Length: 331
Image (cartoon, rainbow, N blue to C red):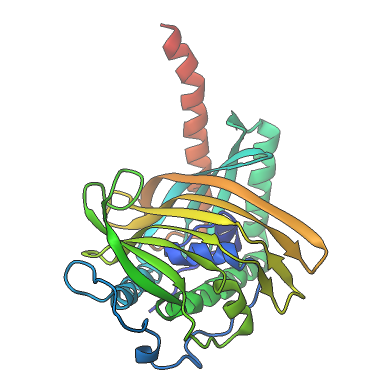
């Protein structure tokens, strides 16, 4: 099956066809991960020991429900026929940035259209257009972007495949989906997760990263899709025995995924709060709240040039609406 290109631009705004991919992108921003499953013990040795916790409705064991859901998430992630145009508004302590994105057959195209909810100036928009035109005029740059996207996507897919085994899952009740996560009105299964002590990962780096997180997972058991995941870093996490960096205890993440109205699911909110160090000396403080909205299906064979045209047209339409709104409200 053809893999959908998901670029570093995409990763920067913590998006992905799978909500679990986004979580791991946040926790492992720059750490190479070995292929999942190379040295994992058999599935039977990965499930929590007796006494067994209650099972979700339908008598599906929590670990098996996660495994089925990951399979469905992977299928959606790798489906080349589902592509969207959408909007992202990301709030950080330094302000907000609103950006339009279009998924194309070639790569992800993006354009900043507002800063701190102020429409971008003509000079700022000219810079965005020049960057996109540069990718169109220099095929080697676009090919480099494609290669980066594929490398990132392949790594995250390998991590996603390991998720059923990395954690221990326990049934924790049910909730009802809302307009903010899942398919509104539908029942969701809530699972608690914590690191699996019996898991032998193929990479020390992934073990150190995933071994310090725990939280809850909401799954639409009928559709096998993840509606929300919320977790925390419950102990300091080091990367590469501390040489590459450290993720401090107390970090938190909340990610919501929703049915966007055409039967496909996309991440619609991500809240992240992490602190730590990179290469022992450089501190980082990652605090952001991002909302993804206004999803519209685009043709699966859309070229990058056509995607750029869509971005420009959408930016022009939004700018005209912004100019008309004050005049209309004055009447």
